[in-house]
Image (cartoon, rainbow, N blue to C red):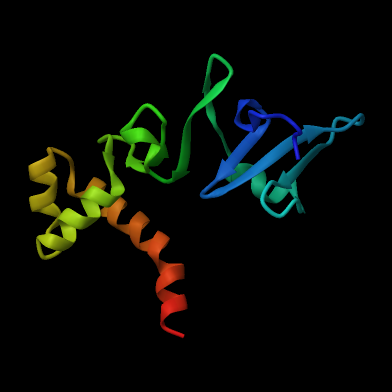
Length: 138
């Protein structure tokens, strides 16, 4: 779509959850948004309030908030999804939560984070697993 080797270097990229959009302005100063995955145009007036820009340093995307409280940052845990305030991968927290009888208080105490951060990680991980679980049940 961008015909360049480093598409994430473009500051016109915006995200909401796991979706990425390209923003452009036409000659009449109207914004156009295109979903990068399916190349469909979306209504800017509807989706714009939910979009977030990627964070850039030296023209490179460095952080992407993919869900509330969850980010991807190549400099943290090799770019795996992490709880933003804790810097701990969502997978580690979900596994610790499940291994300890779903006790967010205990897991939070062990990692010195809030139980809410533990639950944020667990919800994110379960949302990721939901499509594969649904596919396996058919």
